[in-house]
Length: 245
Image (cartoon, rainbow, N blue to C red; front, side, top):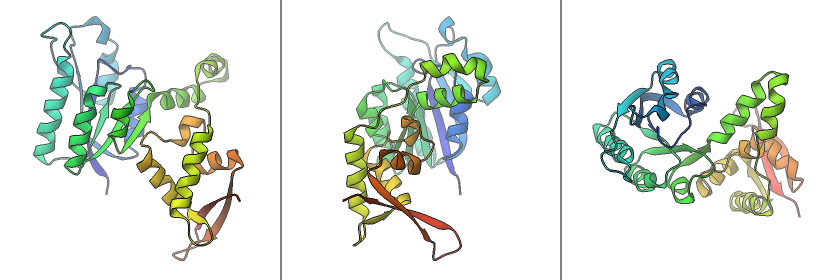
């Protein structure tokens, strides 16, 4: 059964260009039953949001900036999140922001048994990402959009899209995770490897490195063995991985 998700968007800290892709991404993890965005809608800087909010049925919540230098939007979003939590209407939250101010909120929601998915730009501070069950970079959605564009337009977009490099630290993380799950022969089920990687590092995503799935990412490193096994529950094949000696 799909998780019922409350999607809360910090309009002051997220660009409006990729809302459709963002909502499509969120739909992979559950049903967004509550969709709200917070900001001072008297501010001309937020005018770009109007059309995309209508197209994606996101409810704007007006929050005036009462005091210079204080982010009233954050406070309104946090208060709403706690109200929704206590209402018992959802199973999880999707917090869309690149602001570290939501770190404590994410932690509190997880303490209450909620699944918490974060979405923001790569500049998002580490503590907020670590406080979520999963953190997704907006840049992933940007790169996917560029890949879907016609060739004439894509050339410039491709130059601007950038993927993370698979560093020795990433390979070490994968190798350690495989070792944690390996059987007596050193083989680990790839599905479990992916799940544990996510728990260890919530912002780990094969798409950050230019791969849609974990299998091709692991193959590209030439540091791991991969084989398929027939599932005992049917004709499907399961993928297992092993650290090379």
